[in-house]
Amino acid sequence: MAETRVPRGSTMRLGVVDGDLRVERDGRIEVDGRLAVSGELRFDGNGEVSGPAECRSLRCEGHTVTFRGELKVLEELVARDSSLEIAGALSARRVDVDRALRVTGPITADEVEIGGTLEGGSTLTARKVSVGGTVELRGKLIAQKVEAGGKADLAEVELETLEAGGSASVAGGTIRRSVEVGGRFRATAPLSFGSLEVGGIVQLHGGSHGGSIEVGGMLSSDGDLDFDSLEIGGIGTISGNATGRSVEVGGKLEVGGGLKLTGSLEVGGAASVREALEGSDLEVGGSLSARRAVLSSRAAIRGKASTREGLKAVELTIERRSRVVGPLVGGHVLVHERAQVEDIYGERVELASRATAKRLFAAEVHLGSDVVVDEVSYTRSIEAGDHLTARAPPRKVDTLPPFPL
Image (tube, rainbow, N blue to C red):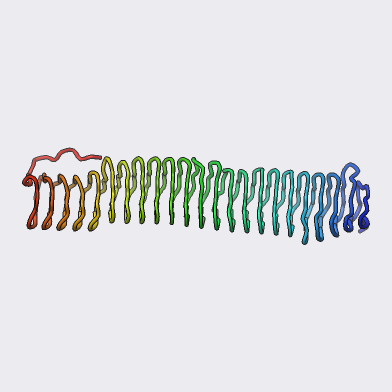
């Protein structure tokens, strides 16, 4: 195949080139309408093309090559130890640039691999995007897989997976399968995602929804958040309503609205729900506060719980030395030694030794020794240990008052 050369440091005016075109160091091409190279376009150092260009393949060796117009590569674009700057659109089957790629227009490729920095002023459409350092895009990104060794600063996305070693931000969109970020992740608009795993900090926009969320440090959502499962090692803040299957909190969780779960809530530290809490199971190792808490199965308190309207479960267990403020409502309510509770409504209520309560309303009541209560009303039976302290003797009634919740 014939080869045309642009000598080192010279300028040539070219249009259609039959065969290969080789541009030596500091060569410059003045484009006559459109540069169309039927073979390979090769740069051996710094180079510049003044207008739109098209070639079968492009190869650069060292330094920086600038295209002052769109660039269309039918096959591969390979830049070894080089940077490319394109003032227009870029299309290629495969893009492989060692240093940096900066494109002002749309980018279209099957695969984009950048060793250092990728900067895009418009959209990017590809099957796979891999960047060793930083990627910044101002337009929508459509791809199956995106990887960034350092930072990913993206606009709207439509992806299968996103991985970033350092930090990542997106302006909403969809990530259908998974997000994995080592440091910090932020969504500035509603985001739909499969799974989200972040080692440090997560900031989500209100209206986001996804599958499993696992955060090692802090999570915040400035509005409602829907999820399948949520696991937070540190602190979580959801300003709106939270809806999902299960939540596990090692540190602290604050929900500005209600928390509605189909599964369990496990709190190792502290959880605060401004409105109602709903779920199947509740386990509190630290503290819980809510307007009301209704569990379809069981609840276990090993610390402190406070509700304004009550805590309800089929099985309620208040562990030793725990404290509950607000009514307790359940089928079976068990209060262990030295625990402090207020009113209890249940089918079967048991207070272990030295437990304290206010009013008890139950079919069956079992009281250990040294129990302190204000009053007891029961319909079937009562058993009491030694030294019961009560303001009024327990009384058997035909019917109990309506239970709260």
